[in-house]
Length: 129
Image (cartoon, rainbow, N blue to C red):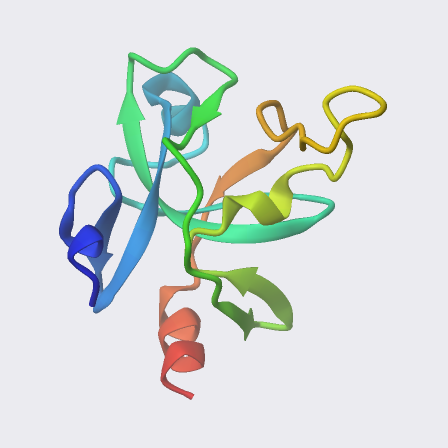
């Protein structure tokens, strides 16, 4: 385990695995049945990442935030769905450039959905396999 895994602003330990933290508005979380440090799935048409929820009134409604993406990439198949558990949020970002004629990506605004992730047992079985 890396020392950065043990920094509370980066990851949190849940059932033997350090999950990347995703910050979200407390009211948005409550509307989805999500509590602080629940496992959540952040997803769009590009993929799905399993993170731990950090609920706060400091994040605007309708917005989720992560300080940065993760250097880990760990895909698993759980209940027939491919999910990433290393915190690699870049897999959700579009591959478009910021402006034409440049070589810089445009990951700052990505449309995603968030839901509570209720498959911890199956996730742990996939991790152990």
